[in-house]
Image (cartoon, rainbow, N blue to C red; front, top):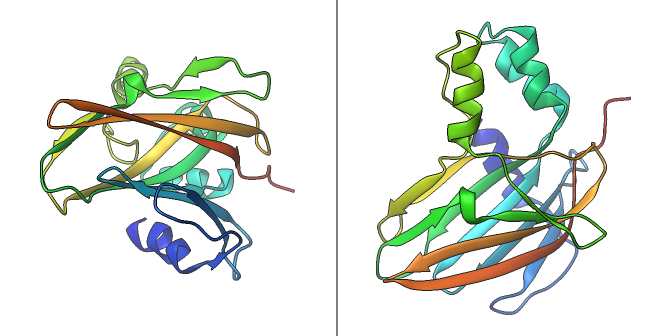
Length: 183
């Protein structure tokens, strides 16, 4: 998984950026898109994840079909966050929102909520979904899936909230595109 997400970082930029801008890229080998923001002590990147990749990853771990489809039918982004500040950085996915084209904000399903659902199915699997309440030191990073309850191919904005030394920061990454549905 780490290699798959990090491979996309080497993609071709489709926009240039200054500090604080969102840079969009397209991987020349896969055609998948990614978006990166770097500023205010945070580097964050969201990468399209194909539903078939989710299916294959979860099936390889012997997970039930109903669990696999509960994630694979969502809009899934691979998420990579890195603390660029000199102080601890914290975030809570419960504070994040996705914005639909009609400008309505919606909650993002947290890892805690996913695990409650999966435990209710008798599954004790916890790998893959982005940790939902984290504080990490300078230079530390984390990755995992961020899920959005939208169809494949949809366009959404992501409102990301984090704090450094008690100071709250917020950034909207506009017009991210969910991975396309399988053909």
